[in-house]
Figure 1 (cartoon, helix red, strand yellow):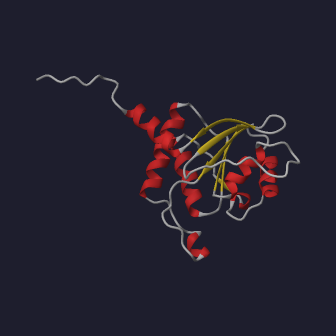
Figure 2 (tube, rainbow, N blue to C red):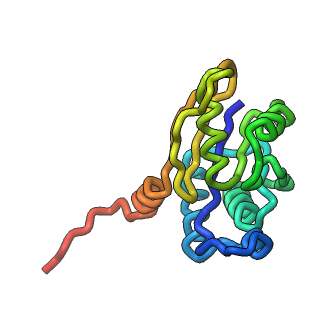
Length: 178
């Protein structure tokens, strides 16, 4: 299985009230980043067999924008195993339930999505996971065939912006005729 772990895009300032915070949508920058990431993923010819998101609005919006722009046509599943208060055993259970899919995208929150990624990269029984920092809108690709997962790549939000800028820039040389 190829597991793609995506931290939701920018959603502005965190709200103190958890009920209000759970309904916090992506901001303008977050929506733009999702479109840029989608463009980069499409140019890489990546398609997902299943997309699973945290039930919080900002994650659902991130998953929806990525799914729509990459041609994903199935329903996006929601899972509390990706919510901010989820535990690693819940996440492992979700992965076990999704094991028949070849390309799985999960969208979640900091800090647990970082912790889940770190725990997948170390051998079972280790006291702690690897320390991985994922900024908002970062995407990691892992191979989960045997043993500890193998990190194949990590696209930081800044790298996505640079890739998007270079892929959309005109390939024609700019020459001045004075």
